[in-house]
Length: 192
Image (cartoon, rainbow, N blue to C red):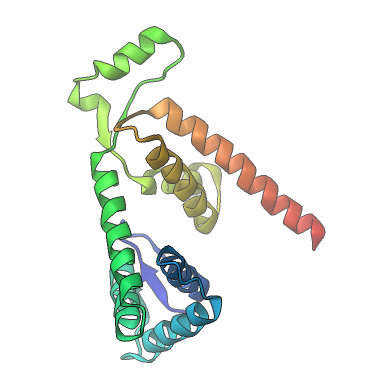
């Protein structure tokens, strides 16, 4: 039985042990204790717990996050749990501060519209799930690939430090990252 994960946006995807391992590995690296063996072992504990607890068929992403933090805290990696929590809340804060503005910037006058876009109808909160759903529904991209592309775009937006993001920029970032990911997938298929 494959465990299903209910994401914060309500979407459902299959549980991936490798994501848990990656999360733990990243947390250990952030405290200057990179240890892939420890990450593998701790991820095994999380996965075992999830599959053995009450014969569940689904789990929320926030439950998984709590279990990872508990496993880190109960081992010698309490600082990794703290760093993981801080990163989680930092990303949540960044998401809450970003607004998408329905402006197609092609020239300087359009850029001025971005800054003067007091119209509430033209603004919306940043939600990477919108990118995911668009790629899945309109372009027949797998949900897993769409989530990867949306995460890449989100990371670029975060790194830019923008709070007002034109929809046209998001579209260009999505197209660029989608092209790179799809090209890489094709290359992998050719090699196998």
